[in-house]
Length: 277
Image 1 (cartoon, helix red, strand yellow):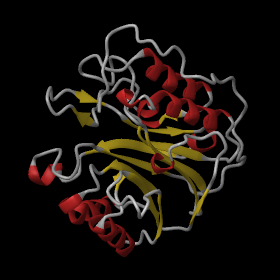
Image 2 (image 1 turned 90 degrees about the vertical axis):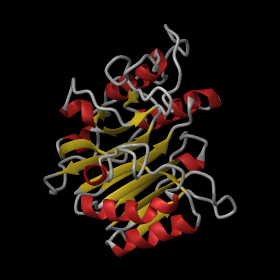
Image 3 (image 1 turned 180 degrees about the horizontal axis):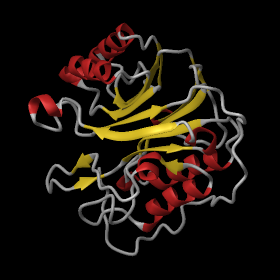
Image 4 (image 1 turned 120 degrees about the vertical axis):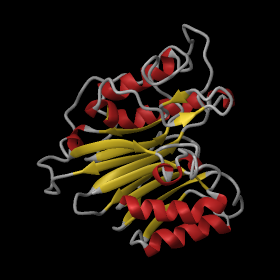
């Protein structure tokens, strides 16, 4: 089973045809798209994805605000929306669904606000509360988190102690960063600042304990880059491509209880920083 998480940049616009073809070439079984918009190009993308077999679709886009960034989940198997108490209070940027595939699992997709909005840390804390209370079995939390680890996930100082602490707190709950779990010290950047052209890894997938044994691979891919020799021809973000294997049902649908931090920690940064996007 292949899952693709991708920020498609401002709804895709004229790029939606190429975005749909790229997703088809990747052979995605489930996709979670950030910055999706319910504009005519966005509706065209939904139709294109359905034509590739991703018939089941749920979006957080609101028809009265078609140009607002939202999320889209599309899959080959039925989807059912899950409402979690205590989750982020921004419905356009957070969605949780059950995927009724050969390996049933729950997928949470997020697009975390940036730091200057003042909404970032409440959002991160709410995601962490959901992770701490999780009782829904195998699951992935994916998306553009606007967060990362200091040093290894940035070319210049940007992330702070609170954002790094959020990733650590998820790990304490049993939710591991899929890419770092498989490639502990590998540097990879998923977004580059438009002015400084500095790289940051701000797109992640967190896998919980019941699903971890099924994780085969996690890689970042720039859509269209091999053909046109530009990483940002389809989006300013790399896509995160995850492969799950061994489709037999897990023995237990519950994660072992572990100690877990309930807060992302000190909001103060030990050094001057800025948001990656």
